[in-house]
Amino acid sequence: MSTSIQTEVVIVGAGPCGLFQVFELGLLGIKAHLVDSLAHPGGQCTELYPEKPIYDIPALPVCGAQELIDRLLEQIKPFGAQMHFGHEVTGLTKREDGRFDVVTAGGLHFDTGTVVIAGGVGSFQPRRLGVEGLDVFEGKNVFYRVKSAAEFHGKHVVIFGGGDSALDWTLDFADKAASLTLVHRRPEFKAAPASVAKMQELVAAGRIKFVEGIAEGLMAEGDAFKGIRVKGTDGTHHELAADRVLAFFGLAPKLGPIAEWGLALEKKALVVDTEKFQTNVPGIFAVGDINTYPGKKKLILSGFHEAALAAFGIQAHLYPAKRQFLQYTTTSPVMHKRLGIEGE
Image (tube, rainbow, N blue to C red; front, side):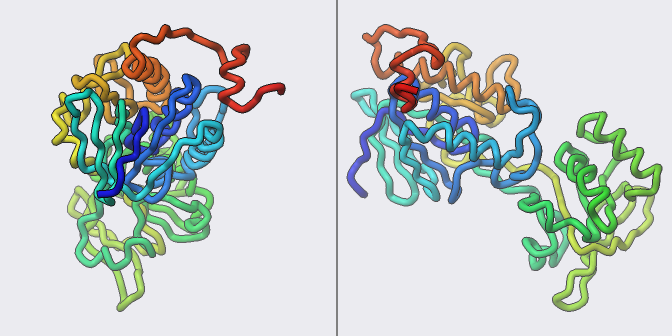
């Protein structure tokens, strides 16, 4: 085991909420180390939909998911948070002195005063198409996320799914793909009604095709991917020629080691209060999709609010004798110094 890294806060998870937690702590003069099992920051935003537009970030009418992460990384630069990627946290124990030992599978050991769990849905993998032999073409012809939208332009595309991601990309590629077929196992959709209505208009106009059914088999000639076979809910069989297949069946979330840390859980989410977003273990906080409380909404916007209040809760836990003052970044000289904008 390497020498312990002493810190005030360890943040587990480098998605948007974990990154914004760095900012809110930094405004209070609190340093943090950030740990993520992925090889880069961004969480689901980077892993699953980097080019997906987000419309509900305040003051940004539209913002790409990866763009949001890039902006957050720029915003937290003044606070010099140390980031440790490719490290899954495997151990979290509270000591008799009230501090925590945090251990990663890669051999890092933190001695920290508090912990913030911002792990999104936990460790996750996209649910895959259950078609024999398809794994050979994953990453080449079959995808579970869109890293570069341009790679699908001018291609024959088949999209599986009935949620927002499936419908969003169906609408986006409708005029950019050589052909596009949407496949969903039933006529009802989980996506936003407006998106469903637009999709149905495109189908009625003959600009895209919709098949109600499920994936049945692979179409290939040797090493060459040719498309996918679909069995319709009415018993019909469809051979859908395709260059690219996208499947959006959601994530298979796994809490992993988090489930073994003695924290109160409700439907695989960490129960927190709404004053400071602390778990049932004093000193351990949770923000973003990983937590739950009455009225919880899984929005990035909500996670930012949670991070702001958690920062004050963390400050009170670390320094209970210190009086708390709400200072504004607009006018506070202390905030200006921490942000590195003195004299501007």
